[in-house]
Amino acid sequence: MTEDEPARAPTLAHRVEYAVYRVLEGFLGLLPLDLVSLIGQGLGLIAWAASGKHRRLVTRNLRIATAPSAPSPGDLRRLVRDTFLHSGSNLLSSLRAALMTPESLRDAIDFEGLEHLRTPTAAGRGVALVWSHMGNWEMLAQLVPELGDEVHGGPIYRPLGNPLLDHLTVERRTQQGAVVFNKRDGFNGPAGLLRGGGVVTIMTDQRAGGHGELCPFFGRLSSCTPLPALLARRTRAAMVTLSITSLTPGRWRLRVRPVPDGARTPEVLRHLETAMRDELTDVFWFHDRWRIDRTRPLSFYTKESPTEPARLATVPTRLIVTLPQGRTDAAETLGRILEIRPDARIDVFDAGDLPPLPEDERIVRIAWDRDAPPEHLEGLVKRVDASHPAPLDFALLLDGNPEVAKASRALGLRSIIGCGVTGKPWTRVFPTPNDASGWRELADALGATPSSGAQ
Image (tube, rainbow, N blue to C red):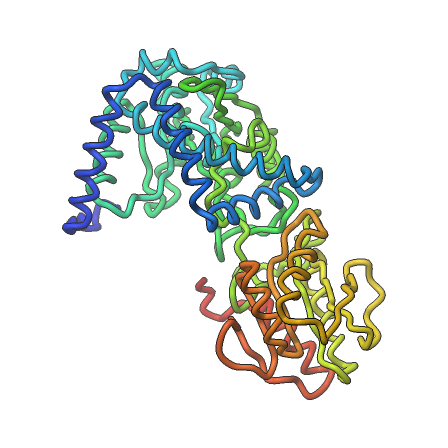
């Protein structure tokens, strides 16, 4: 909320939510931190068993993050389960830690690499601290006090939806000496703190939408915030990354690493990946970080074309494709997709009657019996999904095959696009093109950015 923006009036739902929160944290305040952490693990285990939707999301994210050295199916399931356990532990213990004194909280932390913060701040130089949704985030408040009373710092934060909880959170942060910056308030506040030798913490693992810079993140092309590199460059601040990892119930390690001066966004993201890999299961993988658009799955809504940044990606964007019988020109769509997005991998269903396809290792033929019972298609789509470390992203069914569309929906694909069809489960429908040029234009439409630039 800016200074000129009126405070939001809390609704009845906000007041009920606030009351429940205060009762919960009051109860947790009666328990030791290690016990709260264990209770959180138990709740995380229950969530893992009960929520298939979130299991699928976490699995998808971890498949992308681990694609270069893909774990076995059993190891992947253990990573997913441990992510739920750690997330439950970190969530509850963060609530408990917010009620603790700095002195008692300090006993729950092991620090590593603090010299990478102390050296620049001792010289009067600001530090942009890059971190992710990872670990017990209340531990972050202990970093700046470790540097001495003369150093000030705090986060750029997104206001909470509940104004009562938002006010409580900001009040607690500022009472402990932090300087907080609403991300809606712009660049000048954080830049001023950095120029004065302070520390600004920047959450850097979220999607940046149409305002981001396109670069690989864990090898997968994504829209990433350029803010840390921009702030450091404009203020001559140092940059560091932070990881927060669980050691034992009720104890965490905060590890600081330097980022080279002058690092641009792609390099900053590579250093952040290193920090997150300290313990992937401590990362909050419940954000749909690599979500594609339902109607334009090749677009990032940025002014920047994805074509050149996509050449640096090592984890592909994957799609399954069916082609209409007797339309040899339909293969033009595939060639154009690879021109727009060099990071694409296209799995084409092949019933033995495909037209000539571009000779490209990124196009993979999948044997398919058109006369097979529809119930067999779900298994086929699942096998195609599992045939590569990275998950499938969308279905492009140029023949409008309804059974493949249903199987794609059953797998949970976000975007299912067809030609000459109507209704569900299609997320976008095109008329069947008349010629090769029309098929190429269809591919262009999948990567187009609307003139409004709004996502």
